[in-house]
Amino acid sequence: MNEQVDILIVDDKPENLLVLEGVLEITGCNIIKAISGNEALGLMLEYDFALVLLDVQMPEMDGFETARLMKGSERTKGIPIIFVTAISKERLCIFKGYEVGAVDYLFKPIEPVVLISKVKVFLELYKQKRLLKAQAELLELKVKELMELREANYYLENLSTIDGLTGISNRRSFDQFIEKSWKHSVREQQPLSLVMADIDFFKAFNDNYGHLKGDDCLRLVANTLVYSLKRPVDFVARYGGEEFIAVLSNTDHEGALLVAERMRESIEQLAIIHEHSQVSKYVTISLGVGEIIPNQSDTIMEFINKVDNALYLAKQRGRNKVGYLENLSESRILVM
Image: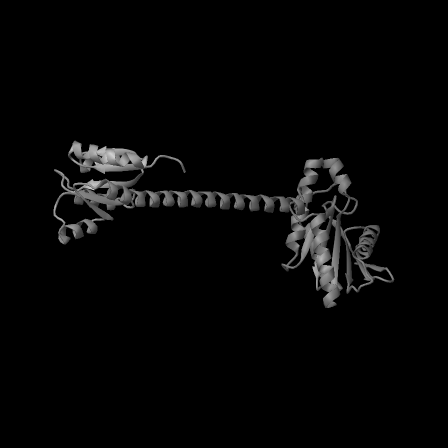
């Protein structure tokens, strides 16, 4: 904020300009001189003036016309104008000056003390305006930085909860989601169901078609499982490797079995060639389903392990099937 301030003085008589310049030296401002209205308007395109001291009586374009043109321009309309004049002090003349945009009048011969006191007022206003502008720009910059930081944090948060390969939720995201869903089910005593899915003979797929094809397969299976869920509250994540897990809040075993079967069919309908599968010529999945209305003595890990057992038995019974954990305490499993 220590930049030099520019003041424009306009008078068609050089001797008057010298007098004004001499008086204004005490302000420490950069004094720019013009001998006509046209020259003054041209200089306003080059400088950001804090104040214009404008003679009224000038040939070709008088001070009133110069002021009117200044106020008509977006760039210069905010510059304060003090008219410096030797003409009549009659109210009609003064009113005309205010009508075209003047903020004050000085009458010749100039009283240096009066001139300096008036100029200092507008210099202080200019400095305050420039300070506010700088603060506004700084605030805008800080807001921009804050928005960029929020976007970066959001991106990093997504990185920590999104599986990098498939683009769906990852194991960490599942752990957070199941924790909330479990607490809700305990509190409301509503059923909570899990569906675990595993791609059948995926190692054989990878070994024979290569890891790039394997990655493509994982991505397609993952997103198809996501689209198999119909409710916004349902959740599916990559659990690890070729395993996926879905959380179905407020869903009993009948609803969970319907979702699991829809998932199984949707993967089969993709018709991804898998010549090295022992169950189908296409990629298939095996699934395990479990339902619970948890209480304080139950644990999430125990529930997950039971559903994993249902998935394991589905694989034992031929794969491309849905295994169901009918009763948590008895661990009795049905295979569809």
